[in-house]
Image (cartoon, rainbow, N blue to C red; front, side):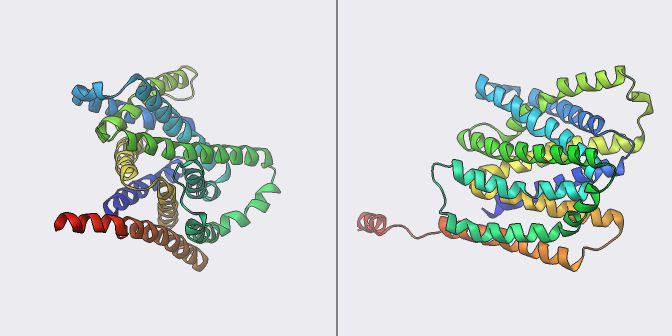
Length: 323
């Protein structure tokens, strides 16, 4: 379980960068950033598929259809929607909505599981995580009133709509992805990651071609900074981050997978503070502590379950065999 936890932590530390890149590139539209990122991710994935072409027969037609949906909806559509939210309501407030994903994923995973975890076991850590996230996003929440009173109320509402849609998508994505991974342990993780990414190459290429045709941007005008961040997002954030996340998804219970996303929120806060040259407030620090405490309690609960002693009947059988 520790190795799976570290894989998930690494993925979230990488994914935290997606919140700050749109801020670093204010002159680039969220759609352009999303299409460019996933065009590079798609190209890299196609190279991996060619390298592992001998393993393609291990995936069925239905597997490829699911990979297409997860790739387009869970990656391209999600990041475009998230970027729109960041631009319209700010990274901090968009982070407030994203911080709900660990809670919605955990609750959905337990509601839809055939082997539900008793609610009394997970409500305490979830309450700690919720309280911590509320404290962590207290400043952004307080700014909602001022945003509602501004002249940009329509843009604010649209941005909140994008943020809510991103929560819905990434409540569905990690659970569907984890379910497939646990049912297909024979398929290489690199192949499944590349399968999701490969479909993004033609979709993103068509999107970029359409933007170029409308005069929204020119390939010749792209700056070196933009190209650097797109390669970073496409290879590191997408390929490496997704691969680490898939490794984690095979080793942790689905009820825990959603809670791991709190580390994406925490990393986004840390990166934002670093860029702005500021330190987290005392309230934010206490919120971070509560979030980490909640996740730690959950991990301890499930770790204890996996190390539970064998039933008396099983022990008796083994003792008889030993005799």
